[in-house]
Length: 200
Image 1 (cartoon, helix red, strand yellow):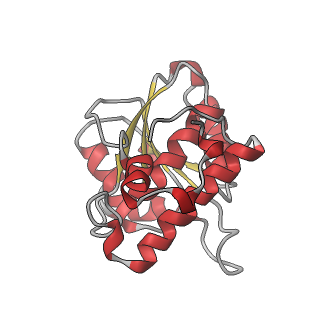
Image 2: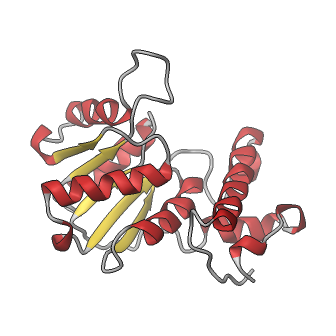
């Protein structure tokens, strides 16, 4: 079966858990850059800072515009950079992508920044940071739009809710995960994400 063939209403909670969370664990490898997907989430910022201080990668790239927020709001990337600096990350170790409004644009915009700042040919592994339930879509988007030679270590943040073992305990989180499933299926149908064969 392919992702585009999935029907959410026919899936069990166990199958949804498998699809969203399995294989999305941190493998402990080091990389060339920590990429933080856009949001105003201290959970993501703390995870990125932890990875940096653990010397898992030498730079952090934060991605996200202000377009999802009220007029005059600070861009997500600037918000995250400011918090990273407060946590002790040197400003010159933080790259910013300021135009992205969604996950696809996070990846495409970040590829451009990496080309300008590091040279994409030098990037062999990216440590991707986002919410645990968003990580699957991040990974599929990276595999669709980033160069094929880049590998990924997936580093979901450590928020108390929305993890593999407890996402069903909170109604709001459960709705977010069902929305993620819907988005992934629709994006593969529309060709925004490469379709993949899966085993559920």
